[in-house]
Image (cartoon, rainbow, N blue to C red):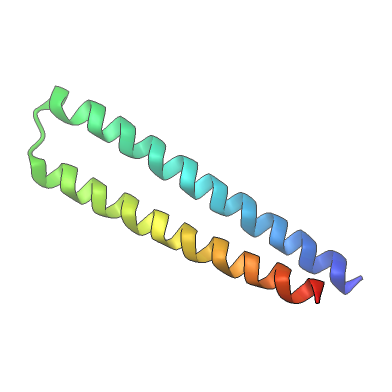
Length: 75
């Protein structure tokens, strides 16, 4: 029973991580497409870049922790 819960938790964490990756990259593409159309300054583009980098760094760390949990549960 406990193993099923941990596997389900890992699946949920993986889905959330995937949504963060897809969502942040999608928002970054939209921001880079709309920014010049509205005449936004480069400060906003850099701010969007930093937000996406932070989200992707969080996702990378989360993937590492999921991988470590799966490795520890195998052996």
